[in-house]
Length: 113
Length: 118
Picture 1 (cartoon, rainbow over the protein chains, first blue to last red):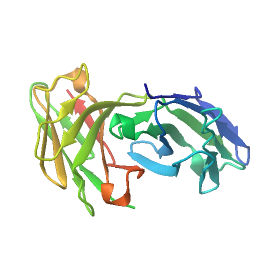
Picture 2: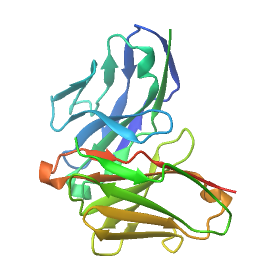
Picture 3: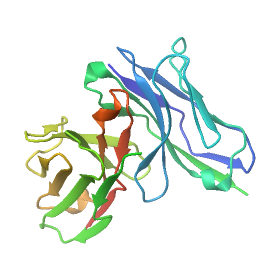
């Protein structure tokens, strides 16, 4: 079946530190992969996505590369800001399961000045 | 991107009453919408898939008589929590996909509804 395993949190970093949040997946087909961000009390916003192997999604300084050989989609940012404090969810969607979304458990990030 | 609007953002109700939450796709037609429940500091749990013009598909363990879903139009799905109890207090989020953008399109989420049953 399809599933997403995400790095446990919470993660606390100082401003301008490097961020990596690990995400690996299991899928029976060829999924699309996503990172969503959730700010307190809000819904989820798409951060970036990749729809096929070796694609790199990027947005607002965040990047993630779809690695089929390691079934991974790790989120990275070179220099985090206080405003990046949020919960980050890795997710996949695959046509063989009706394009239903599968979410990781979420990783809480706090960036301190 | 496409916009999904959820209403209300928060609601407090008395135990035993029913609460309706609306989810609207504002600038696209959504034949399918999804309802999630999120417990504090946890991930989203898919409750049901709402299909326009037909019955919703509920995930295992979700009481369909308690969480009534109606998807009467291509832009509106509603979730009614019937006879609410304190254990139903949670954050409920809907999402929809704009299939006109292609099969690999992302899901767009509403802002969520914080339900507190007292």
